[in-house]
Image (cartoon, rainbow over all chains, first blue to last red; front, top):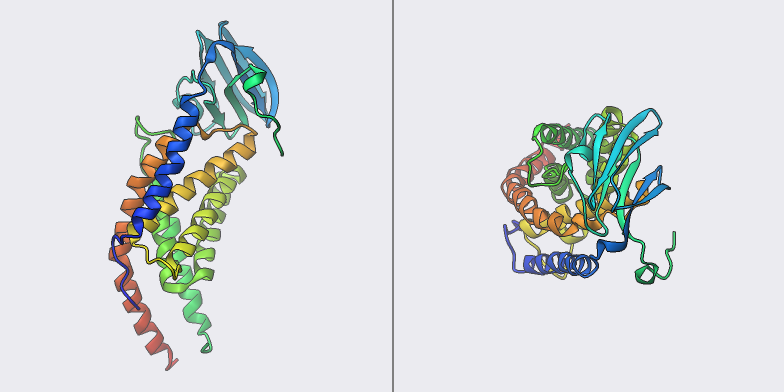
Length: 128
Length: 178
């Protein structure tokens, strides 16, 4: 059996493809960030629980399946201020403030994402 | 194809599965670095998956993926299992296609990068499914990290593979007499 090379010229192909995918997403995210009319969409078990404007200061307590967490919304920023899940990934992630950003707490199946409430920019349809 | 030596196969697969599980346990000890997304891990088990594909074939790589995810299911629960399995299966399939590609001959680092990237994308997709939220915001930085972790795993495979293949040849020779 031929010994496989550490780095073959064809690897550039893989690198270019990965970089292109990343670039597309970066550009896509860069061009859709007007948060003036955005809302924080809180979901539990994948179902929309509440949608709250980013402009008001609020603390929301969540409960699902024995898991508890609270989300704090303040001055255009959203973050998990508390969670009793074991890994605390949601709390450690810090605050989000841009369209499309989201924080997910998998153990409790909580998620909060910033979405544009401007319907004109929305997708035509979402097929599930 | 020659008659397979079942004992040899079983032992090899068990060894591979054990390596993958040990690596993923070891990985969980690495603390979250502050500038990296929480939960991001280098994906060291991809080293074993790549070795399994090259040395033992598709079925062995599938066993490794399933065994690793089953271990996650026992120790960390169903949600973590879904995350682990989606990432493991997707990256295994992609790495298999790349390594077995006849048209191009890819190197270890390229395969590692592709594997790491697919692993992360599949996990993001699974997390999106589980929570019904698109969480692809971190894709740009995740692909950057994939370049680093993929290079690490690819380089590791480059050094691990030759001795494994040599040992495999010896195994096949001695297995004739059993």
